Length: 522
Ligand code: MSP
Image (tube, rainbow, N blue to C red):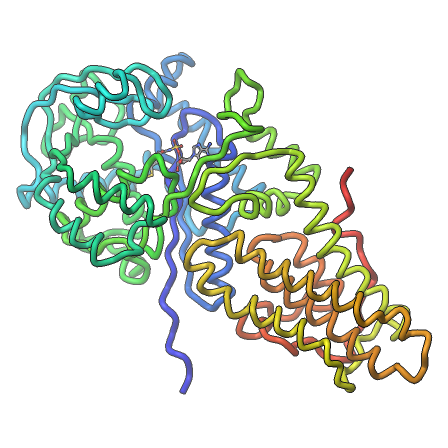
């Protein structure tokens, strides 16, 4: 029986504020999403990968004011920087949505209108605190606890007092709690899931979802009230469905919603979990739409041991990312981001640790294995991969490491355990380098009676490095194709079903010449 069609895989990043240019934090989520997208494509799934920019709200207005330009001009100035960085990093998003595009604005209006029609939105008045950097309402208790400053950037909270529209968030809270309890992987990591759950159980209030245009003119009109604009988070969150088209409001385009919704995973940073784990599911419930399958909140990067700041000089901006990529290669930057810390935890970007990780794992281990293997096949077998005819007991250890990598991969990717996923390939590389030390092909090559044994050893090395490369494809997006080229696999299919098992490399394949793909860095 053929395998059933795998489910489509829809992955999203947050849509980034365009009040400034992108930095390492933005690139982190996008790189992680790209790796998931690439992995699932190689696993044979129909993948949809969405990113974009969040262009409305008070934060945008203020930043534009400071520059003396209109918010839309600022958006038009900065959105291309995000697009350019994703191109530079070879990100394979299928779509890029801007919240100022008509396709988004129209669907936000339509979505809000359905909530108005179903009575989930009502008129009320709000007086309370607002965190303008986070675009977030803060309760009186929380404001007091935070000394009336933002918990994120320590800027003073602003007192808002106005007549606005409210969404019946409290009505959906019990259903949400039930859903989170019944679906342990809905919010990940589980420590964050527990935080959300306990905060929800402490009780929440209805959500203020509009602002008077006299106070904030920059946003999407409330469809039922031209004097108000939609709260920027309601506007922003709905991008995830707007990019597909929402059938319930009559504009399914090309069946994309039916194909890809609900999203397989929303990747976000820990600071925006509440919006994604509470507001978004409740809005979807109110609109009678299915909930995303998972929301995964990653940690934050510091830089050289401190919070990133332009004044401290440790800020990793677009330009710094450019420099790192020019020095090491863009895929090595991506490798470090996912390798250095456990996804979900905070981590520190450290230039020295970057260099060491590169030298140890990529130059001395992976790069060295590839080049010594290709050189030995060149020297002992005229550059042609020999057939593994004689049994060599130690091959079992290499094959076991390969199988362990292959078997663990799906679950590790399901858990976004990128560093452990990479570790699987590196373990295979280590096992193979050790195999070379133990079996000593360089000594065997001097003895003609050992040709068969030598042949098996060289085949094993070449096949092991090929497999390690196949599994590193989603991350080392330039080096792997170049290395597979050296193994004469440049034109071969590289999906896991075809290339992801032991024994795919054909004897008789002419390999080489060895290339310095990972030169050591001092
Ligand atoms: N516009 C909202 C998201 C709306 S999604 C419907 C937003 N934008 S943002 O540009 O401020 O932040 C986007 C992402 O960058 C967040 O997930 C945030 O966690 C992440 N990061 C910002 N600084 C970061 C670090 N220093 N480290 C890691 N990620 C960080 O929020």
